Image 1: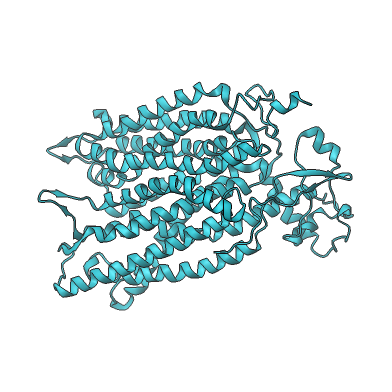
Image 2: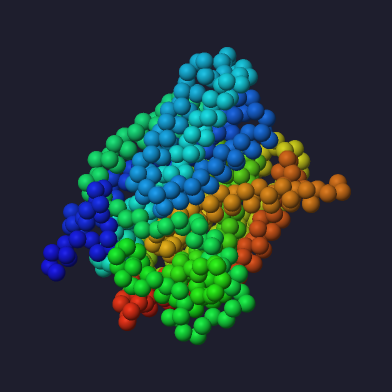
Length: 582
């Protein structure tokens, strides 16, 4: 009994499948080998994404519409492909090997991209800053490298963060407390990479060469991968215990629908379930029936039909995914608000006075770095001061529940867009005062008026973005935690697509019949404040829906205990049981 205590209690193993010693593996010792990769990967991604439209228009001679569409398609692929990578990891080869294969694909894509902008035969020739039109071969090679990166990101993005979280044993009180800080510092390293990309790589690409601008993060990725594999002896690995997850998730509602006319038995023991010996022998976790989404319980009814019933455990997994989906739906509007940072906020900035001193002019897009800077300042404050303070007040190890954290972040985002609308009203007054009509006329108003909205979004993301990543990892069924984090990535992708849809529809509706578009080409003769006001209205409505969904949400229990012949979920601990109150 004494010897068993030195091993991890959550069933994690080493690469050979042997139980691992808790004192020699995992925790921050193991995570230290992972954080460098996240910083360099984010540097590579933002180093490409933040300036890709510029390369497409100036070097490949794409028109504005085509370049914007191609950037959106590539970014969408980067955020959507993690669904496939997470499924492969959770169902077949695990997080470590999925990450290993995908990281090599990612680096291959970066090498190809660096070649595409460096090797003479692979890039358009330029004379005095004017580049010839790219050939079909050059275009094909460039986009092949981009989408190779997207494929690689599909396997690395959902697995590296969850693999890091796997290094903390939920059954150890000390490690569970450390895990509370993990996602904060994980995102901190991500922010560092993004900051260097937006401030350093963009400048290098435009002034010192695209090859150097892409080559630096490529070398950084290679070095970080070497460091990652040096840490292999210290890693803990989750054992794959699931069957075909997607098949089960689809089958449960189908069987429940077929059994819709049947009456659920009053005794839950009459529902179909394997005995406890099956779960003990397979190492899988049995989940007891809950009162949420009771209509799905009909999938576990034993009937005379040829359709075999689902187990209660599989039904409960489907219930949890459905609960996560409802929360996910009300996070799309907040993702849309964040999409303004690289679009309309930048457009606002281009019209304002950007001079700093007599010679230097601030690039409008560089104000996006203040989002990252406010995050970098806020994360340590949140982790070191806010959480301990609130922990004393609430008794919750996280300080506040995850959904409370999300709610606070959403409110801060709404305030940020409301501030943006107020600043836009101020800008319109200055335009009217100085009788400005031309789209190229500079509005005599400092660009630093935009700092509050950028900074507020950064502070909001400390609650929102980190909270979302933690929520979807923590609340996903144990056998599909990589797949669960794709709720986070896909929400960002769809939020950006939703923003594009809203901008397009608002432009068409407001310009109909010769009217003035709220978001016209001439921003000095548009009503961007109306659009921001519209975003505030739909965000307030969405906030109401979020509060409703959060009040109905039942947090996942962390532990199970034996009860009679089965396995019954314990009451959720203080970790997340307090009601959502903002």
